[in-house]
Image (cartoon, rainbow, N blue to C red; front, side, top):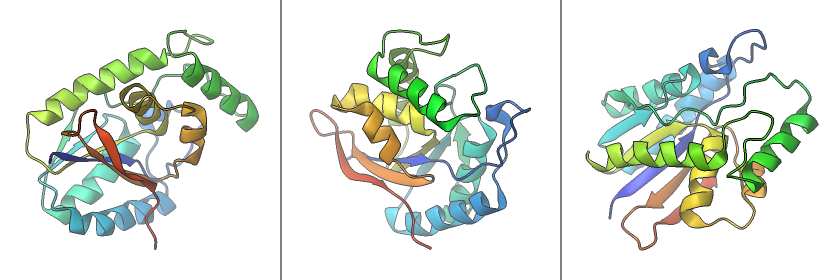
Length: 189
């Protein structure tokens, strides 16, 4: 069984005047990344991949260092793009809901969920060429878009809302169709 761990990065230091892709981990996020790495001790990881975005790379580096591995950055694992900063949580959630419920439509100029899912799937094909078990550290919206496409999720928005930050899930790539073995779970401690 090719087991793939999908990890939503740890908490970033939010900086509204800096592009989100450049946000570092917060102090809390560093501790969260260490907690994910402790959980991953039992996974027997042989490869770690990450989004090019700083918060995901940093989370992956903590995980990989503990496992004695290197991080391979793969284009395609970056977050589903929303160009504008939206400071209002309700407005942001409504935009994400529309993006996930209308995957083939560009809502307010945002990347289409179907396009984000396709580029993530292309990245997974790169991972499939390497050793397993493997982990990908990425982002909540793009992970949801990918899993919505792969698993035919009934309510992608509710799924996205339920994914903690950080969190991990296990996917069996060899099942036909692939299946989620473990739902997204936050590390304890």
